Length: 217
Length: 316
Image 1 (cartoon, chains in turn blue, cyan):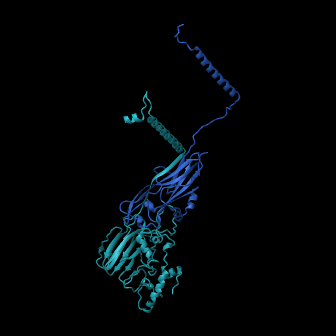
Image 2 (spheres, rainbow over the protein chains, first blue to last red):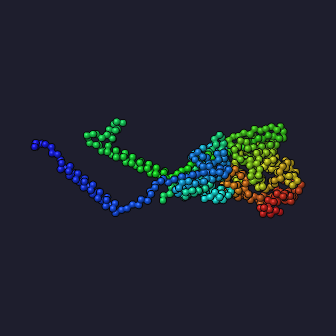
């Protein structure tokens, strides 16, 4: 035999194969033993499905019907012109159309304000002379009885109009409904400081958002 | 860019990796991990929340600016020019009789009134437009003005309801102008004649043609009202209204009770003054001329009696 000839590692290959066989034998034996001492019921059905989480908000029209709100829906009457003593009440209906409980809250956001000039020649923002309020009830009848007249609406709308985020959240079960009244008014005592002159009409652009969060089980 | 890359990002194939390169690569990796965690969290949160938004709700304001027309009625019926420097419309009058008409014009507000300054004295008109308290809707206010000398007339438009600013109404404000009133400034004292001559007040006034039955002798303007007109102060609303809670037009004077803060207590004072002033008048029984603050004690009209009774004011 030549002294530099390469030896074939038969021993190593044989050893590796033996080890693999030993491991496979251990796995088979362990698995079989475990299976011998367990049992399964063939009648269990594991079904996975996605929960339906859906919120629907509608606003009440003048004829008493409800119209669903989307991003383009205007809830407030655009033809309304605010002057001292003017009050506008808007009714919203929040419905849980899904099958999961959720908590919802309402936010009023001033998206923009157009400045105008008053009779004194001063610039002013209409937002500074408006007040708003918000009330929630479980049924439409409750809501109407809570705001039976203008006086009550005036008493509720006491917050200056600004970005408002409702502090608490209301829980709503599947198929549940809540009603919200949103009131915006110009107080009677607003003087000529908000009586505009010129071509520019003072305006406030208002956004209303109802946000729902799923309740964890 | 290539230099920057070689400086902070390049790892040579067979060379030593620079420390700053390792730091930069580690930092970028950490940032990417944080961003991914945030995105995952926000996505998960969004998956379990739902928003419905009504975006662009526009809230607009109305305005009120009365149009004024003034013309002579005693001579050439000439229409005077009313200038409008800023918020005040002015007219310069010479001696004579004028008809003044105030209309809503192009105003988009449903109601308003005017504050008229005549030689420094402020007068307040009734509502031009909707007056819910009286159930009226007058598109204009017309009154007659008589002056005996050069007089400057200033007209300031004011939106809202005069009662809410303390200007009250004819029952408690002697400088309150209603439709068809006559303001006679030719006498030594101010005279707004609104009563019928058969009621015995002002029948013989040389400058008065009775037009309405509202008594004139109730109160004087409070200085607070005048200052409110000029400073536009706002007070807490004290009126109570009873309009249903829907989209509601301003119920301009829909106050079952006038504003408490402006409830005039002057009738008592006026009556006292009137008593004092009329004593000489009764002594000089020949005169039957009636002026604000002076009342013939034996000639209280029914409206005055009613108001005094309501306010518990004893009459002599």
